[in-house]
Amino acid sequence: MVEILDPILRKDLADAKAVLARHGIVIIRYVETDLEPAVMSEVKNSISSSPGVLRGMDEEDLDKLMEDLRKVATKSTKDLVRLHTRLLAQLGTENVEDLVKELDGISKLFTWKRVSKAIDPVNRRLAKAGFDAIHLSGAEAVSDAFALELNEKWPASFSRFGDLAREAAKRLEAPPKKTPPTKKTSPKKRTRSSKKR
Image (cartoon, rainbow, N blue to C red; front, top):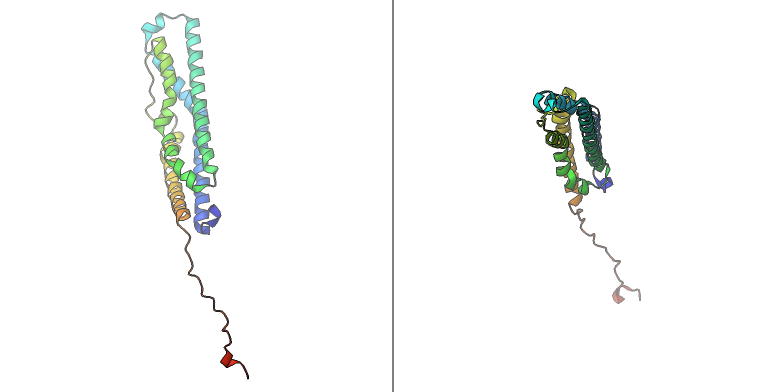
């Protein structure tokens, strides 16, 4: 299908897709490396700010709780990485019409609102142990570089790619222009009068 697009649009779309994929990969790497440490830092703050609950725990219980919380944070982070990787893989499809249908879903899931949901399982475990929920104020609480990618670079490149993909889908949907049929002239039949006598 993409082959029938004009070469300039096809090139622009491919370039925009490559840029978007690069930013998506960078976001995934930051989630893998920086999200869990940021969550665990907030976990330590939550625990240390509740001395009353801490007094009711011995050292072994506290170590077990911290290990549980780290496992929960790791699993939640890995789940988010898998989700983002799956969404990013959808950009590889050559079917532009199908891709356009997925754009809204992709745009909603590469956001701080969705990333911050990775904290929810950790908060449930903290609540069970009697500690306050944690809160990350925004992507910059993970790292400034992550905030730049998620809040600025990704949305700008996604917007450009989305516009080009929609334009390509619109052109592909348009019926091909029909060329008017050419009249075929058949050779004139010789009449009797034109025959030589």
